[in-house]
Length: 431
Image (cartoon, rainbow, N blue to C red):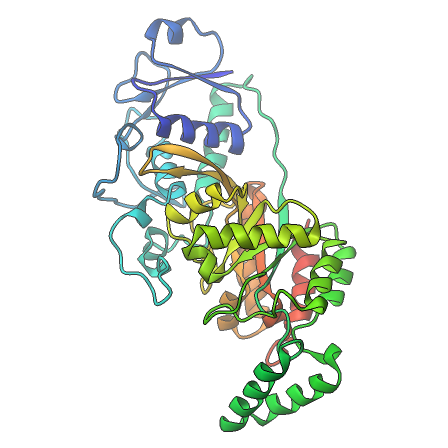
């Protein structure tokens, strides 16, 4: 066991140490504030405070893990052998920055509590983030810091016990609009037809008419093909279906349509199926509970995983609502139109509620790639170049590479055949 001495044990301190050492590094740890217990400990040990005790392994602490609430923190980003970092220490420290405070700052989404201008959907804009501003959004810095830190610890404590981690890949298919033209009812179909006509969208009108006579031709209905693709790979795959009442932002098929209900149940026979919460559910916890219950009743299984509409995560309120609705895991943390690691990590982590200063009982699974962020790259070669770089970083630290695709984009075949690209990505990254 590695023993950590500090002057004060807080919830922030415990949360961060457990995530870095236990989750990321696979090292058993203990804490103490008693100097005599630290000195007599015979195993590996480090000091995390303002001053070293003797000549032990020492990391000079920033104040962040010992404070409460939100403060206006001035951050200066520096370089640690090619990796951006912040919260610099002094020459006595065995590493040049406070890895624990820096990790907590990113994992807790500290910056999202600070005043900021939201985007048109009420989301935290990626351009506002520290990672975007300093060019490390596409790098899981928390994981890379920990990876380098582990090498330093092993060099100092050759007998330290480490439980190895494994790289993991997860593919998510987000279904907020299961069909483009089919199953929409007479009124919505006719209204859509005249809308296309008024805009002279002739190709779309032709597709709409074809689907009226042959619903299997609906461009968004690729579910049997997706199930077939998933069967050929050992990758973990998940489907998140919206199962909500119609609204301005939520325009999926009626939850009372038998063919839509059958579709969900048939996919659930081959894959994990969970809830893609509607915009309305993101604003009202009772609606969230209702959608969860209805989908659970349909597939006759408990619903534990969530995704929020448009990846709209409002820290900390979204996670409090998910906890109240008894979700255990969420897959919404990331940016829709930017690749990268919103919390600086590829590894799942529990949510820390800064306002309440407690760890909430929900695990966040940050995604690295949302399909709509890939559109700006224009062709497959540029997409693979960008994703290969991210994949290598995640594979190095044995993290989790999570990709989110919508069945809507998978139905498009303009410059890129997205379904073909999706299959290539699974083949390329699942191992």
